[in-house]
Image 1 (tube, one colour):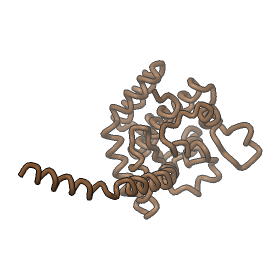
Image 2 (cartoon, one colour):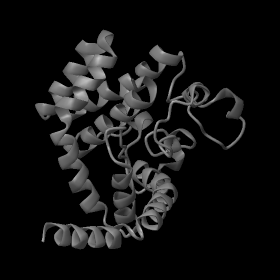
Image 3 (cartoon, rainbow, N blue to C red):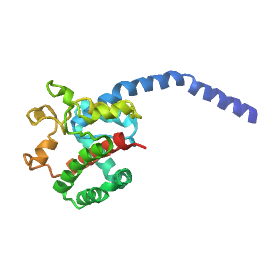
Image 4 (spheres, rainbow, N blue to C red):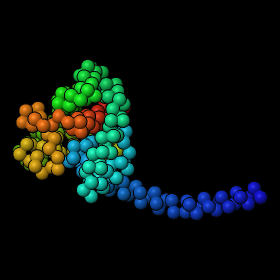
Length: 230
């Protein structure tokens, strides 16, 4: 009787696994094709994913944005980063102990709903993290491209030299301008208006809301991962 049950289970398992290699290959193909698209779409809306997220997350959220469901994506990522807030803060501080006081104040301001303050402090730390590791900045175009219409953060070259992207596709926001780094004349081409230059130079005075603070937290988390991943 036991042998018969084992044979039945074995046959069922064979049936389940019969197409597994093909299904796995298909899933990997979808991830490789759609994940970079998803990451780009998310950055256009001001959201970034760190290495703690799954490739599938980028694909599914990117599809929602393509289908016009940005509100759903905002809800999902708002909950996600609120739940991960303590862990994100800890990772950033652990990898950047000299910036502990600034980072703690920025996160404290966010928790106390002082979003104007949290956003400004967090934005300053993005260039700071890049400079500490590479002596290059994020919010500065590569000098070799300054006379062209191509934008790449100058830090991109240093990061690419090290080939530190553990997940293919995460380099996308470094290969072109996004809403946070775009020149103010071109901001209208993005679906949301959240731009570092406009904020730090006092042009935008309506940015101080929770979702924008979480978006900048997501961006700093992304930078922290690609610069200082261990």
